[in-house]
Image 1: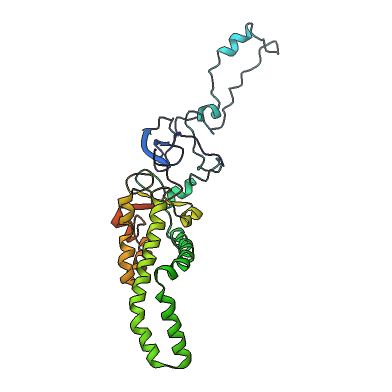
Image 2: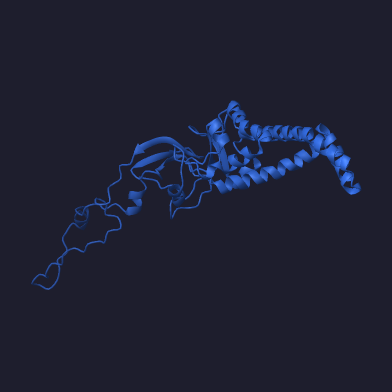
Length: 283
């Protein structure tokens, strides 16, 4: 899959500017666009026919000598395609070739963008990516739980036996013991999810779920994978949500009404989730 080379392109957020595309994402570098205005441009205007002169008395036109000179006397008209080469058009614009790394012009105009013009990921894509990552983490936890929380299986077995036998004492014992096991399970889940997410955030800026939806995590003020301290901050809200379950729901829904489409954990870490990949950190 080919990528659009880096260069100056029409700024999707401001038609009077050019913005530099680094091959992966839009940068904050802009320059004034000095293309002719609509009133000055002759492109797409109907070509005017020269006035018709009366025939000479002889009934025929005389071809002037020095035909080459006659052609040179005509003003040079640059072809519209040659004029357009001065200002490259980004492939995300209508009529240009499709390029997965850059959204269509209509998408740029429909939703909020970062300060350097990158469109933010929609809430729907974030939720689907979250669910995909949750399926992967569930499989991982299924293997790790018997190792780190072996009593979880014993508590569940005792509860099932008490239900089948109608043993109210066993059911009461389950209610008193499940609280401690639940806390251990919650901490294990948070720890596994944190290692999983942080490892992908600081290297690729995308977990497997985000890769599938073509979205990524970045700092609010600059592109690229986030650093380790920022990644740890992003996991603070889920940690508190381990003990306050309602917080996780509020965190999940918050981008629906937030102007920058940030969840609570994004606000804590000052991060954004955007469309497309992030440029790799220089080695």
